[in-house]
Length: 475
Image (cartoon, rainbow, N blue to C red; front, side):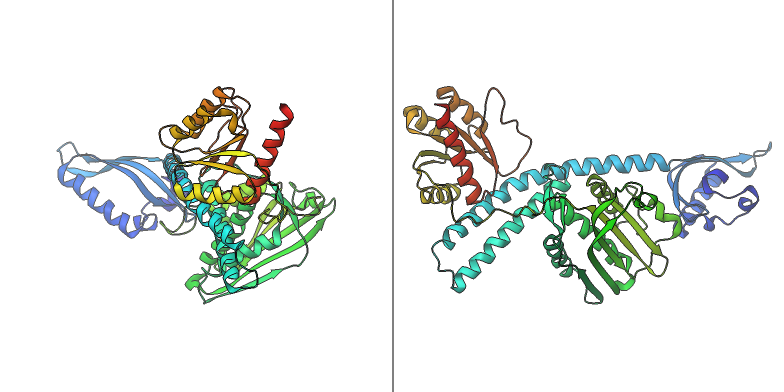
């Protein structure tokens, strides 16, 4: 018990058990010892929560039995206690892994259905915008619907990322507009009793990162700051500024190279972090919050993202004064950030024939309107079997196949395979609402392109034109 609790023998002898147990556990202990005394039967205690001398919690597995004198009279108790904190952590990690696997499976199914809905919303909105004069209020309203659709698309991507169902896409990203978007979302969740301050520079700070991950870093740190302030009152400040380091940076931050960085600071006027916990806050599952109020994963996820981007995160805290998290991300040499390619007036067009397959009639009609607007001749089908029969009856009449992946009777992959057996040279675009790992270059399929729904008009037009041009060059 000295080793488990951190007390010396003299400190532990005669100590009140309420000093190393909660009131509830101390009462439970009294009941167990009374039961052992009354019945004479030993008792095993699982996952016994005890408080160490430094205030941290650990878990024990204990066995208690009665000691009798030669006359059979009870004279005391004996027992064994084993520290099982490590095992508890492993069990928690396993449970979390299983939960994440289940969430990932659920997220994949939701993503497919939700992206199909978004594809219809964004597609029909885009078609409507083309027919409405720009100076009208209706055009402004539809533009807001379009922007909300894209935000919803990004949200689905973020859910898939958290559940590890989506690959990270690193590219030059401007921190300022992304940070403002994240803070706009954060501001709507903060109680009015918390004063929110924004100190963001106007410089073009471009880092090589995944936008969803950057969004997550800012929101996780800000959410932690919110929870650190008692009674939901205080000041939460977010600062974004450029900073340069010379060769001496290695003395302060050994994992950083000299150069230019973006510094993101999230500070609060909350309770602060006790000194003994500062070195542990980035450990997975470590949390100082009450049970049920946090998983202990937020800061470890932030730490992993920042390290993966070759950056650094530091924390400065004083109990009772608050905390400040400093994130340093290296600025890229790219002069311009990659912006969403959502609007392009000079879209490539054509007059080729397209076989379009999707089991949802609204999506087929919407895509048909878009493709015909680009000049293509479209043959729609809501059944994979009908589509295959149509192609089989006149294989030379079609220049490209665009098919959904999840369709009844025959999946998009199998439809592509069957059509390739009839005409190997026809290019195939596979569309999916959930971008699970698919090897589109498998020898038995050879799909030319994979697009994730909702697919915007610009990307669709460019991919179709590229594949058709490549197919002509091969003839």
